[in-house]
Length: 76
Image (cartoon, rainbow, N blue to C red):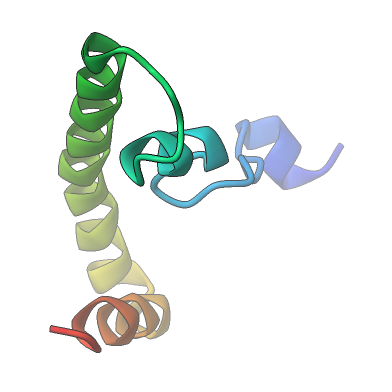
């Protein structure tokens, strides 16, 4: 079996947001305010979790960290 499958690490087809979440947060979906707030909260939690991933990449995979840093900081 593939190492990624064994480790449970498979691409989820998304980065930070799913296609549906992008649609909701962009205002292109007709959803109730409570659901939009839930999606916003989920995105914020993922950002907090992302910090842990960034730390691992910075320490162990500096090339990947640099790619992310360039992408995120490019527009800042």
